[in-house]
Image (cartoon, rainbow, N blue to C red; front, side, top):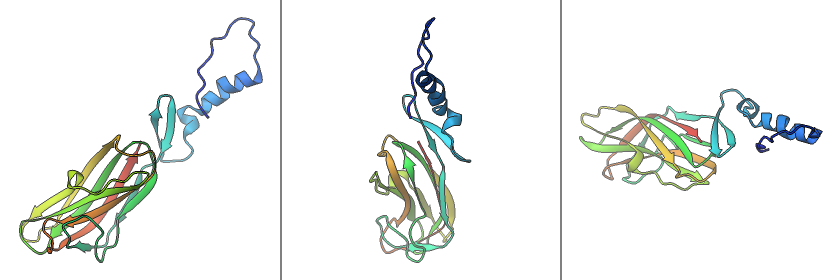
Length: 184
């Protein structure tokens, strides 16, 4: 359904069921209360005069996993993700959180990021990662917020956390991993 621009009524104009339905019923269904179909939803304007219902998506993985590659990918032992799949517009806010440490060498970087697949194809990158560089095997719990501002393709997108180490051959350990996406 779409919003109908309200007409200007004139004296003596014939009021029909079709006019009432378009001007009252249909327009009321396009308002915020008419759009919400369930609890814990929020509304966003996806284009001029168009309201879409959206829901925050969250996933987490409490298992530990390791990565020894200097390129982004899945963990050994801890599996993939976490990940969420949901309908988005061109924008979304992504929050990732991870406890991470490099177990092999002092002062070597470990990174957690996210990739997007589905309607969009965006590789995990250091441009929006959690990067830690710590000595003495100290695990750091950190978070990162990324706003995809016009970089997504409208449709169903999957956001998946991925991991890497700064220098191949070192072992990065990742735990308490979480991803949250607020779509437009």
